Amino acid sequence: MTAKIAYDEVEVGTELPAQTFPVTRATLVQYAGASGDFNPIHWNEKFAVEVGLPDVIAHGMFTMAEAIRVVTDWAGDPAAVVEYGVRFTKPVIVPNDDQGAEIQVSAKVAAKLDDQQVRVDITAMSAGQKVLGMSRAVVRLA
Amino acid sequence: MALDQSFVGRTYPPTEPYEVGREKIREFAEAIGDANPAYTDQEAAKELGHPDVIAPPTFVFAITFKAAGQVIEDPQLGLDYSRVVHGDQKFSYTRPVRAGDRLSVTSTIEAIKSLAGNDILDIRGEVHDASGEHVVTAWTKLVSRAPEGV
Image 1 (tube, each protein chain N blue to C red):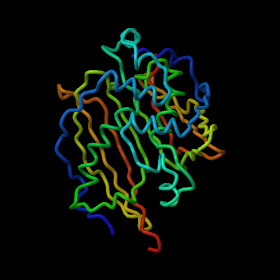
Image 2 (image 1 turned 60 degrees about the vertical axis):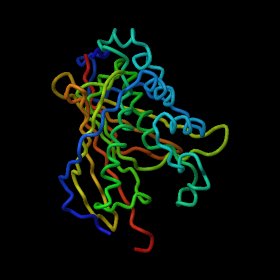
Image 3 (image 1 turned 180 degrees about the vertical axis):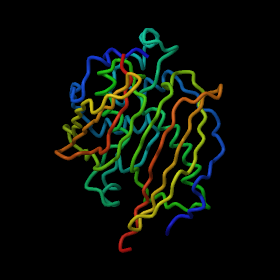
């Protein structure tokens, strides 16, 4: 494990570079194939509406995968992530158009822990709503 | 219908090993649009100290969730899967998953709660490699929504 960020260089409040991740219907089909999650709420709007959703929604695990990229890109080595947890609070709604949706992810160091580790709190938004709650990672820095 | 509390603490037999392939990791990394070379380039992964390409942090969910199927589909537990949504997800890593791993998952029911007619099920999946070493633990909270009008 070779994180490129030094523990001594970060403080509580240090912001990680924010990123925006686009998601279209094509993205969801590709993620369904790669992850093996073929639940039709992620690609079939007729089905999604029938079960009470406003439209097709992104896989929660897709959103979780995007959100941690802000941390892994910052840390350099993805293996620096020693813990990662989220609560799925709101769905990312993905319309059937060229635009799709966006997931905006920001993160900051919330606590410095023992053993060169820090806790990073992550915020993920889509269409003005917080889509993840309690989204936190513990990261071991250099 | 409330789930049977006596299932709390029940552990299911370890799954048959899942062999992690380099191309499967590549496919997953491409699907999430993540170009980190540690996922696709063996040399880049080695420079970071890994013996082979590693998987993105959430890759292992496909394996642990399939293993959780033993719990979800246990007819004695009686969970209505058509009403289930994913509430929380957490991972704790001893090391990253990497290509060549043969991973076995042992699933345990950690908690069963009933809240406002919803059944809440906490499943822990302990992931070990072929030598029996711990790789990652996944905690999955599933919420089975109460039927409308109840």
